[in-house]
Every structure is written in C-alpha cells, then in structure tokens.
Image (cartoon, rainbow, N blue to C red):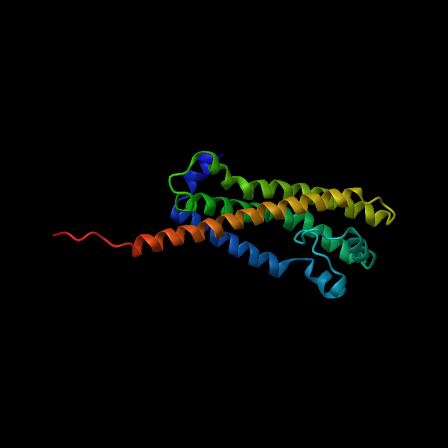
Length: 195
C-alpha cells in the first residue's frame, strides 16, 4: 500500500486529488442535510463528526430537540454523505504526504514512510464512527432511554480519526517548515567562486 501511494504521488495526480478534495469539501458544506439542523438548533447543535472530545450529554440534549425531519437529515448525512466523503479527504491527503515526503524527510525513508498511511487510517476510523453513530441514532430515536455506550464508542472513533488527521497536518506543517528553512539556508549559503 505504501509503495502504491508513493508510485501514484506524481505532481499531476496529487494536484488533481487535491482539487477533488477541495471540490468535495465545498460540495459537502453546501449540500449537507445537517445544515437545517444547525439553523434550527443553534447553540444546541453538536457536530459529532468533527468535534474533538464532545460531551455525550450535549449530544443527548441536541437529540432531545430533534424533530422527525432532523433525525432523517442526520441519518441521511451518515448513510450517504459521510460514506462517500472519506475517500475524498483520505486519498488526497495520503498522496500529498507521499508527494512531499522526499522534501519533508530528505535521505530518511525507511520507517517513516508509513506516515503516509495516517489519512487512510483516519478514514477507517471515520467509517467505524459512521456505523456506530447510525446505530445509536436509530436506537435513540426508538427509545430515548437507550444506554449511551454506542455513542461513547462512536465518540472514541471520532477522537482517533481527528487525532490522526491532526498528526497528518502537523507532519506537513512542521516538517514542511523545516524543509523551507533548509531550502532558505541552502540558498543563502555562500557559493564558492571559480577563479
């Protein structure tokens, strides 16, 4: 898998993948069925798929205000949009990491090459989050006294997903900054004059 990512991470492929990431993210933002829930609930809305360490009590408070159309919108988001979107962020992010890897880690391959898999691991946890959240929503809709165990498991998957994406971003930012410093130093270093 790692070799395949490095083989695919050419300039054009990575640029197209990044453009797809931007387009998919924008489309998701615009057509997200949960936008109506956000408008209706205001401060009581909790983005369970993108909030780190959210409180389960805040989610049950939000669900307590849900109308039937809110449940339908949330379930539709999880069943359709949140099952289609993960490859649109994971694959481009993995390709970007693979593309910049030689600059980020010059002369160091080996054990660090697995870092390009972080976004794909995040995608796996995203799907686990989706399954558990959908299960919890259906159970809670049928019986609001449903135990919160499934929601807590879903929250754990969300936290791991977000942490993996954060680490991916930090690898790009921190090692990217170091690469820029190395480049600047190499440009500023005095060049030997030919006599």
